Length: 401
Image (cartoon, rainbow, N blue to C red; front, side, top):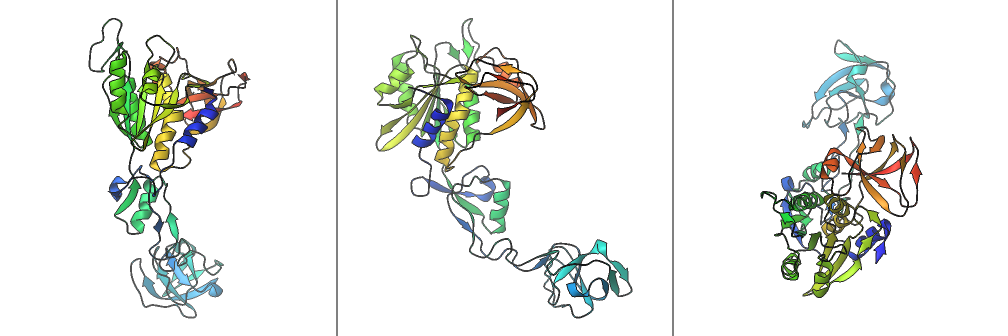
């Protein structure tokens, strides 16, 4: 059955259940190893943040009602110092950024806005109570939930976890992804190909894409164009959480992947998508011993393989990681050249996006086997299936590499 691009992606999101703490394997990792992992627990504030009213500026703690004016400096308080000094009528306390605001003060005048005099300061500034002060608990109250399961952890989340005192965190296990390339014409990348052979580039590219999506790739040996070889390696690949097959899904005489999967008990959700490159993409599952193993049959041409992984298979891996609504890394940019195509298919074409992300143009390419063209490009032009032409300066969708 053939789906539009939108229908095919929606099918993947519908069929692959999102990992939640009740249906997925969870494991602890050290905070230093948590980058790129997906949180599997709720994280709450262990105390108020800030835990005390603190100065947001270097300056002087004063009473707002006494400025503009001249004040006598009666002490100093530094960050990390518990000072017993307080601010009385006509007084000021010199204070550093992050230091606790002394009793009696209700605002901080910045050091740049005062003139120092013998034993005191003079300012012409008018401030409201609370200015330049971070009040206790204004960022978070003790017990407040700050991070939830399904959150992808990056440097800011890890900074927050460290702030809250976590040295390790519970995350969802990374799905294991088997990569199986097929074809009699293939040799391994380290081998010298014969006159009518090519090196297996898809396995290496897919392994990188799997790792970037958060999965753990396992590259299987090349499956030859025979039922025996293909079925044995498919059986091995179905031991993983996801099986990615590259090649053998078209309608050729020796394209036997779908038959082999069917004989293994596969359920097919779709076997064609109205996209280019990548029309003969296949998505389905095999149920074994109470487990559901998902598979994607990706076309063998390298650009087709990479595109179909990014728009379909990546979403499945991210759902298994606990990301409920995996995003497509798309933006809109203005075309620098007129573009036309024959409507009917959503096309993903090598493109060059400007460094500021404002403009884009299609890159020269010889088709879905032209890896060199894709290596020179930094994005994909996403061409709407229902529109025929775009003028210079018109917005168009762009998928980031």
